[in-house]
Length: 139
Image (cartoon, rainbow, N blue to C red):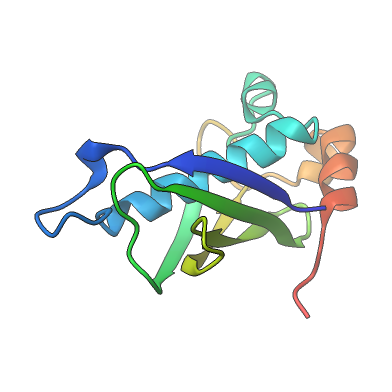
């Protein structure tokens, strides 16, 4: 049930060595997560309009092979943990040769506008059910 998100590396994302700067992978992961959620009828903007926001509380990336300007990455995103209070996504970014460029994960929680924890199951049961259906626990 994961999603493959395609992302072309921009020139401004590269560093002096001519490779994509490591900080950009976290951005790529976020783009992939938002596309995954949107594609699966779990639009973040819709949830925010209901007073629930989803801050990122942990992000990790491991770099395997460099990505250069204009290369396209296929970023697989999967929801691997979800309990209504928090959720975790895992990511695998592959270049066009199929080599793994980076892997990682992000952890998110649900809070209200005062940053107090929110149970998504109570705040929006429909959204909770849609996310629950997408869960693919890691093996």
